[in-house]
Amino acid sequence: MGVIVDKVADLKKIIQNLKHEGKSIGFVPTMGALHKGHISLVERCVADNDITVVSIFVNPTQFNDKNDLKNYPRMPERDIPMLEAAGVDIVFMPTEQEIYPEPDTRVFDFGMLDKVMEGKFRPGHFNGVAQVVSKLFDIVAPHRAYFGQKDYQQLAIIRAMVRMLGYTIEIVGCPIVREPDGLAMSSRNLLLSPEHRKSAPLIHKTLAEARNKTHELSVKEMILWVVNQVNADPNLKVEYFELADANTLLPVESWDHPNGIIGCIAVWAGNIRLIDNMMFK
Ligand code: AMP
Image 1 (cartoon, rainbow, N blue to C red):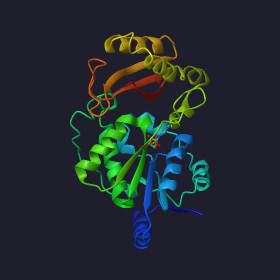
Image 2 (image 1 turned 180 degrees about the vertical axis):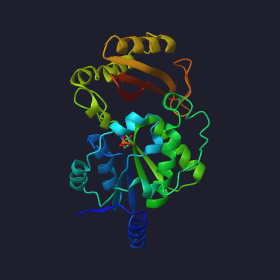
Image 3 (image 1 turned 30 degrees about the vertical axis):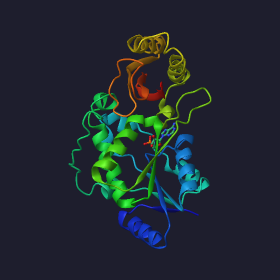
Image 4 (image 1 turned 120 degrees about the vertical axis):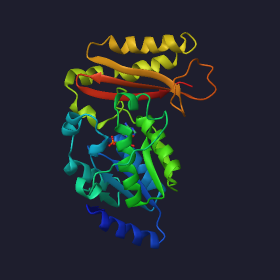
């Protein structure tokens, strides 16, 4: 049986005792409305560590859109049994007051990493992510923490933050879990209208097709092809599609690029914003 904790001081005490007993601690931060993508991270964490801690906290500082924060799905009564079933030891569900007893005014400098793609279209988003994840890391002080490659740029930001702040936490990136029709699982999928839900798999289908066209199309042509392909569905509107260096996330010029190339996309399906990505090289 797992325990549910809502106070920072209580969680710190519990973790301290477990560490004294020599237990390894794994941590999966989430915003709840859990799906199989989250559970895949949890299962990996349970397999790797003696103790698994999962946090559920909808972090206000990472929402640059107030409506998105208001509408974000919250369903703890559904989440908790899922976590129990996956073998989670501790569910941490703090209030906003617990995490931010005072406003967090820290500003992180990630160089170009948070200026491109999500950073460009969601100003302040990654600063909020770094604020909450650093606070959670200080509270949980895990040996390992698990993040999904679905949020590819977020994973890069977390790795940069760990280097910057000198955490000795091992960051484990986990593969994207998809619906049978290819749509990347996301809590926001619950908010899609039936028509938008029907159109949304075109995003992954297009990226998968694009990956087979790298010898037919230049990088520039590929960007146009992907954007046109997705926008051909009137229910979808591409915000950006970029082919970027897999580490720096800066746009690449050609397929001869010396490092890995990641294709990242953000698409509006009605008023719901979806992201996905695929390794191209
Ligand atoms: P969120 O609750 O959206 O903040 O996500 C919590 C964690 O789950 C993040 O590390 C996400 O990258 C990860 N995640 C969300 N969706 C997926 C997915 N479809 N596949 C793998 N990981 C995911």
